[in-house]
Image (cartoon, rainbow, N blue to C red; front, side, top):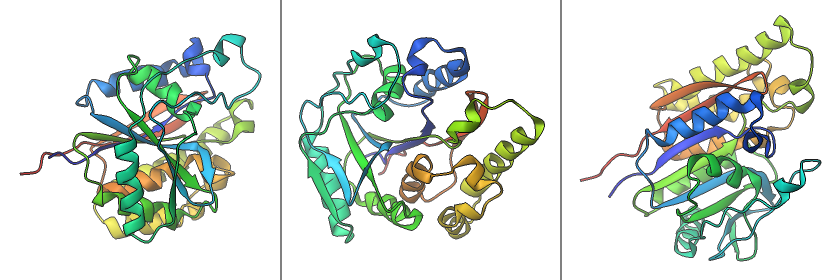
Length: 268
């Protein structure tokens, strides 16, 4: 039995990473390189910043379709296919783990893959041969609740699982295209440095409290005007409950962003 490998990634802007956009070149290289550090998983559970529901919801379709939840891009980006199968058995286990922890949860047998899943996975696992399940955010955007969801997933019994939090540690849309200044860069860096220090402290209680109160961090609301792209990290940290094994700073759209990975461990 092997504990899950867990990775919080920053997934870039819409389908731009798939269009050879120079501002996403470092992200593409990072995600492709990350898979070389991981064992190939038996299945992937992905928490997407692009799916919010009133209760935690898990995809349960055997063959999920595609959701092109972006606008104004070339026609070919609305024909992208990522035909990885679903994994209803994993969806059931996720449902049961959350329910056992008293977290309201439901399954959705119709929802397909949004770009928070298919864009990074087309870079990481282009063969689309690994079964995938998506887990939604809860639309109250409570950091405590998303930490609790991660903690509940510690009871998940599924060998060789990869859990991905697909978000973006910097997600101020207006600032992506603003003129670069040293002041803007320092605001960006101050939050990323706080985030990396918080996730990687050996004091798990302090890290959990810090993430619960993330909006008090330096320049937090500059980097995350609305926190949906940060909360997949809360789920990942709640599940991991320890400092990351791998921390990377990745420049995307001229902004620094953080990636954290916790390697799975074999259990006797």
